[in-house]
Image 1: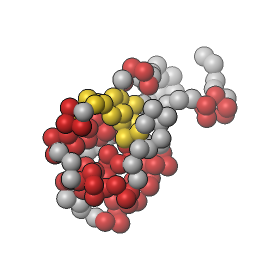
Image 2: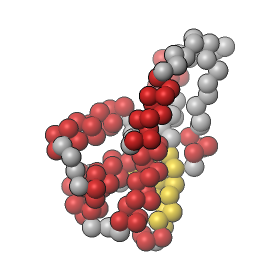
Image 3: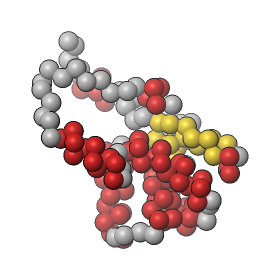
Image 4: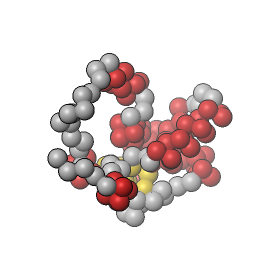
Length: 135
């Protein structure tokens, strides 16, 4: 077993992405896993506004997770209202992938709870999927 160094951990490309075909928009979008910092910011914004209407929640998640080929966010907070005007079917299709990648939503909460009930040993052979496996 090789122990990772600080440099190898920080250099690892560990944020999974998935491409989603969106016929209503005429192409494909790339959805990314949020970094720890981006996720903190996302949840902080959610706490400030409380319960959101479904279209606003969808738009907020998509603004935080749709990225370009360079891996950088395509949208910012000022685009949320414009995204709310898009097709609900398109929003839901992309949202489903974004929620899954980011471990958000009721199924993710159930899975996390189920996984936390069994403490992993220090000798765990668990392997996370590589970014290319999720595309």
